[in-house]
Length: 230
Length: 230
DNA sequence: CGGTAAGGTGTACGCTGTACACCGGTCAAG
DNA sequence: CTTGACCGGTGTACAGCGTACACCTTACCG
Image (cartoon, rainbow over the protein chains, first blue to last red):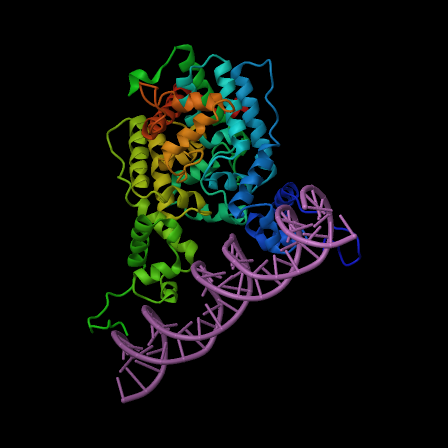
């Protein structure tokens, strides 16, 4: 045992190795083909061996989330709260985009992981250090929602197939959904002649993020409090 | 066949009956216990019978989404775009909240359903009727993201267990996550003595929605266009 | 009256997560 | 030096899932 056929000792399983291999496998093969069995095979081990390092699959996914959260850059210091938050969130976005399955897994978590709590604690700290009240910060965090993670909940982010064909199908339905078609083409590029590649996700994300941060700043400056609104 | 033991003719299966029974079952037993087998049993039919009315489970979920979308009130007319959109989105929220599993299922859809497209078409129409440019409307829709459905992507919306115990655990970790604890209690109620029931979701949702709508209105008034920003 | 199609049935397959018993190796205590 | 406990990897097994496929009954239409 702990020996391979050729007699060389196998690098032992650890929780870390399990987690990082799982992340790599999900990156390569998609989250859909990550099963306890496929992961075990990847680690050249029997499926049940994983359970010595991870309580169950849910906890495996929790651990994977924390691996990704660990890739988020530390807070920049010396910046005003607005750009500090902005920068951190965009860093989270970069981390999440590196792993296409990540947003889906983050969404599916039912309880916060330790890494998650650390991250939130730190983002909240930025608002507070900037002088925003605990009250406003509370509502700001809710307003950001999943956007703190750097992703917008896209309506229909799925594989979607060939975008060319999809665009064609949409144009075909232009009499039923004229405004969707109009909106889908608007803002996509300067020449609106082709439906083409769709719109710039990064731009859309920053647009919404800045809109929210602008709102927070405005409310902060005018000393807004939730007291009068409830 | 098509007879029950007592000889009375069984009401025949239809796509609609399948869909509505599925919704009711998910409401009652939770989305987690909705399987093709459990749904079949509910309909007093063999599992494979469902496949004569629904291509597969994904399409079943699509159909269930459209049932919920069908519960959204039609647009109010005669209102300015801002309150028209607001009202419609809040109606969507009411529909979604009636079915706790709905937001999760909506999120999991990979391609838009017909009902979904109708709804989006109509919301877009409200912005356009209010005079917003196709460009601004495009970005506005992206900014709203899943909020058009009336739900914020909550960080960790899970069962979470006893909130009392959860709050106690959080307070216990107050030295590790002091700002999270502070923020969790802030804005929850006027007397901050108890962590208690958490915060008012409805308020949080409307706060963020109004912040965004305010932003759209401001940009609209100043004739904003995305051209200069990219 | 007979053929066709629609709809409900039964069986079976491959996949999933994971419970539970087992067992070899390492290491500490007697 | 032996013994016993524990840690970590193994093997088998089970219940549940979605669903492919062949079948059979019934309703209807020419």
